[in-house]
Image (cartoon, rainbow, N blue to C red; front, side, top):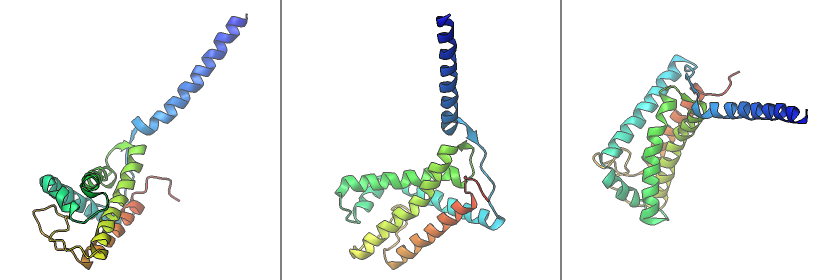
Length: 181
């Protein structure tokens, strides 16, 4: 009799653990459809920002071998190793922000991760622009469009990075994956 009760309680414990596992795995595996933008205008802003990120990523990946030394010219604290890390993270973030911005069918965890990267990209560019302007580093090319299109550094890079940040926050508001009021 005791072994029958033990087997039954064991089955209940396994069922509870399986249910927890299923709930947790929905975050990783269950692809959901993205919500539509709140307004038509905000949808256009989202596509504008996504288009800019695609142009940036393609241009930077096209000449990535030269993009890393370009980031190194900013004179970041960690030297060439940190410049490689910043360049890699920047281009990867630009690419991985696109699933959120384009409304692709991905898991909810990936949607939130992509949202975070969509906001992180202009923050990284703003940090680089501030470093270049505060330290008065004279850059022939800031690197928004890789190394093929030369954009001279200046105060405009701070304003452009702030404009990108405004687009990113507006896009996050338009496509917010959480519950809306």
